[in-house]
Image (cartoon, rainbow, N blue to C red; front, top):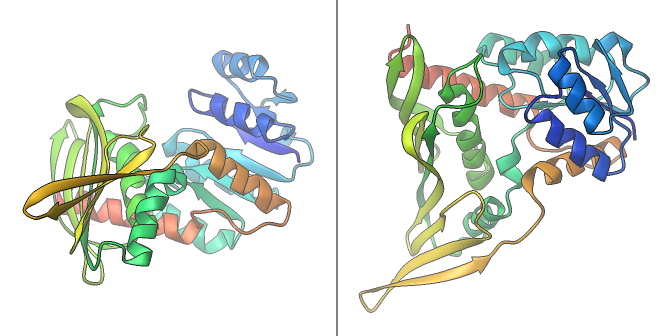
Length: 299
């Protein structure tokens, strides 16, 4: 497979590494000196200045900054091959909807938490009703600032949690309420409530927390399932036995999410099933974040 990579920044270099480990030749579009250096050190099969200069490809991965996704995708999709783009699809809901409408089934978004072994285990608990009827989901994704300078932390963090909700519950909930901490027009913290068909999703994301946390909690009639950290290789099942708290750990070792999602894309290029998330699902996530921001007071 020949899979082009557009962008070789902080995250793009890891994409380059994993694509090569999956057996792909990877020509890279890189313009800055830093990006060119990363591509060269990472063993790119070619380094070119623009998308038009890429050789014949089987697929493309786009890993540019969020604010450039829409414009880069318009050019990349013209190549006529499947495209995998880093989340979010865009920070512009109108552009995201247009891309989803025009790209058909050739555009997919890299929601890596939909490939996390523990998230998949929590989704199986819901699907198999192991803990009875589901009440709701709570996700926490907080830390201090983000390495992205083109969009605020809510655009960086919230797509992960809404994608987790989609994977676990099998449907995207609708925004109900939100409050935010705004700093010079940027949403630095967001607390939000969304509702699905008989279930809820409480989301907390922040770039103003001195403590870094990643947590997923599933509330069911017969217990609570918890992923306590992004690197945890187990899900804790909490329940009550004779009035006492009981914990059971379910092992969830598996492939790292980035490599798992890239493997799914490469297998799709070879004729396999489509990867998560579709452009339509990703556009719905962008629209939900935009609505939560509006509910939280964005003008």
